[in-house]
Length: 396
Image (cartoon, rainbow, N blue to C red; front, side):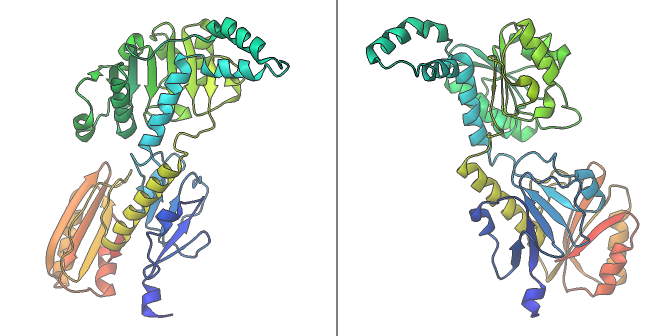
């Protein structure tokens, strides 16, 4: 095997990844396949990795999508493996389906279409026209204009949904307890920020959910929350199934407090109901969204593998540093004091000249990039690995 082949990065793919994303990986530097030994990285969409063995060679995982509940993030963090996602890449696709959900919920569209398709025994067009004119009042609804939409979660998708609703002439309420500074700047000023979920539910005619599936958000829409809902509210969920309690949804629908539930996550208890519109998890199922997610995931993997930079990780801090010198050492460590100083002492002992460096932390994990003047020997790398609390070390 040639030196060039030895330095190739190996990417193991799961699921059907967009060709445009796969084409990002040059043949000179990458091997990409669904079956590959000693992978440096995984690239996937919905594949569940919880029971998959973790190769010793693995340093990164990228999901072409926003949610990472199919990835054992904590286990990977303990191994110093960075986990990427692609927030915002499928935002427009989800936003457009939310619009479809709002329209389906406000007008008797599906009910009217089903009624029309039931008239297969009629063969007189004039008679059918008269019947439809007489029966169409059964499918009358409301306009969205002037109604109030509550958006729960104001990230990439939620902010786009808020903008869309404002353009439709709706009043928009927003709630997000974890709103970032970046998201706050992106949010239209006309969105009225609510202090808690209950106040939003009590004022909104429609509520659209856009929060990730985390322990903190599991069943956030439950029986207690729905007691605060405005009578006749329509709930739209194109986020995750875990953030609603389906039993509470059914009970609220039965009580007449919740008028309709429109979701992308069918469950057996929701089927066969005229007040539920359930779609087969197609929120991000557009050619454009799949391409955008694959392109973003590929670019993030390449920048990490080639430069050690981290962008859109769910477990590592964001770090980006221009290259300087002949070599770059990156390492992750438990976020305790003294680790970086110890590593720098090791470099000094080996008479290594540091040209530039960056250190960032996130929760219990820290990540470091150090550019050095000359390519070090394996003894130095082993010495860095031996430093207490160091988790993973790479020489780029």
